[in-house]
Image 1 (spheres, helix red, strand yellow):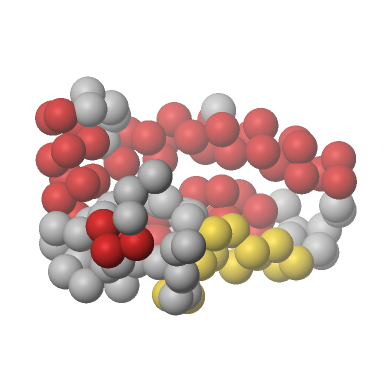
Image 2 (cartoon, one colour):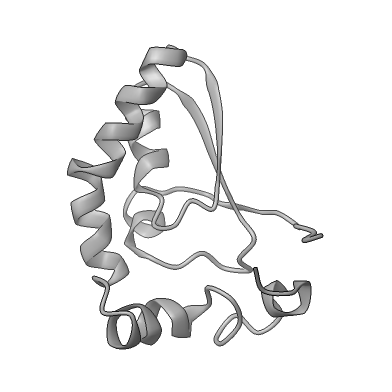
Length: 114
């Protein structure tokens, strides 16, 4: 686990999970799909899996807080299913297509790493 200083987000361009991470490191260094590609795939794969799991535990209109909501697709899917869902992220500004295309307002949270 990185130390707390490495996880502190001050510079949104370069710090932990900043624009550089999603724009360059994710695709060029780690060879993962871009956040946009992941958002499209997640709606059919991961989001459906987690929605099914959530529905086994709670039914709408239960309240759900998703911490570290990435592109926001799962939050949007929970809302479409009738949940009262809220996204939260340690990022100063969230990145990705989900926030803009689904009108998700993300609350920035402060986190302490021990």
